[in-house]
Length: 137
View 1 (cartoon, helix red, strand yellow):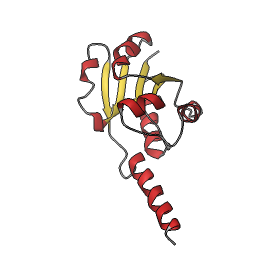
View 2: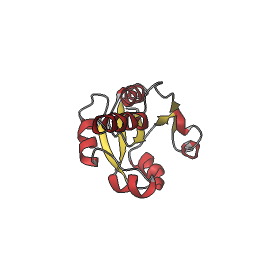
View 3: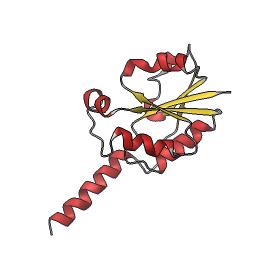
View 4: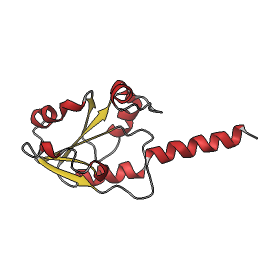
């Protein structure tokens, strides 16, 4: 069985996330999604999520491409995860190109192209703009 691993926050899940998960699953037989915890997002990424870790985890577990969801609690856990779960392929969006090449001695590293025209940052900004328009009337 070929195991694939990917990492992310997956806040306000959108079709770009689904495209990434679909393409990641196509690289193997078993897809592990390492989901950033709320604490990790706040402390290390300076992000506050709209949805809690538990909500995001529940949504990911319902997606047919995802076989296992585990927490991401620190930047350094990637080599440990790859070894512990006997991962063959690490994949992540192309916006991280080159950043995870240090994993190449442990597994194949694949950078998947981002889906054009969609991002969580864009979605959050659109929601804020819609809210501001409604409240300024």
